[in-house]
Amino acid sequence: MRNMQEIERKFLVKSDGYKEEAFSIKRIVQGFLNTHPERTVRVRIVGEKAFLTVKGKSNTAGTTRFEWEQEIQVTEAESLLNLCEEGVIEKTRYEVKAGTHIFEIDEFYADNKGLTVAEIELSEENEAFQKPEWLGKEVTGAIKYYNSHLSKYPFKTW
Image (cartoon, rainbow, N blue to C red; front, top):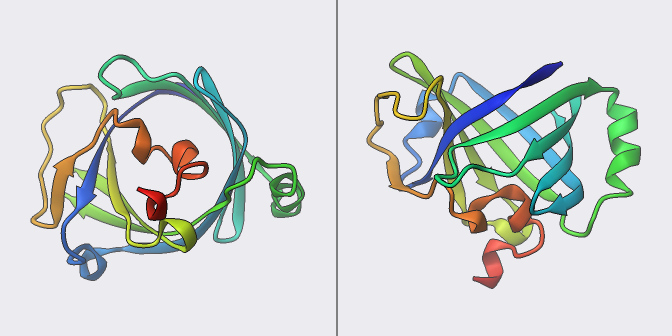
């Protein structure tokens, strides 16, 4: 279980060079039990594991918010996915090491096909990090790139 503030920055991806650099590749299916602007409750299956996550509202910069996560049984997650709001997200997550950090790059499918977003978790908001050549425009704090928003307003409708 994790109970903490999450500090992350989000970027668009301008090439698929990250695929060659990935040390981990996992399929993710996730849905939202709640997408209220003040809090989201997510159910996620990642490979052979499943999680229930609660996230609070982001700060003004969009970099920091409360996050609580608990691992649950995959069978429980599958049942909870049936209760989720419309718009289940499907994606492949690639993890890439860059300097001392790890980028999580999500390649989306279904109604969000064509969208690829990279996130990096930091220990402080202004922490310096290495920017790989495939990293594009920063979209930190842009709500339309939040998974909870993509579930209701998918990329194909933009």
